[in-house]
Amino acid sequence: MTLSNLHETDACRAVSDILSRIGDKWTVLVVETLGDGSMRFNELRRMVGSISQKMLTTTLRNLERDGLVTRTVYATIPPRVEYELTDLGRELLVPVRALGLWARDNIERINGARMRFDTQRA
Image (cartoon, rainbow, N blue to C red):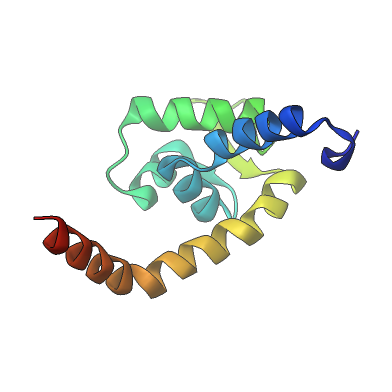
């Protein structure tokens, strides 16, 4: 069933559900980082930056549950675990990268608008 076949209320819930998952800052950063290829947990954590181990674990679990990331465990000593975007995750990478680029290109304009708004309200 496609979104266009859903009742309007159900369609809004479906969009809201998906956007709440993929719209949080850690998901966007993890998906964008994994767009460069598979990574081990600690490598991904270093690349993402200030994310805690717990938050990265939670984010990766949620992405795996949603079918956006695969987790592969290699039987080595110690075990090696790698995370990689699925085909669905790579499809998501297109709008995520576009959004990230848009945010970086427009942060100064947004900050300026916020300052003007706050000054008018003070």
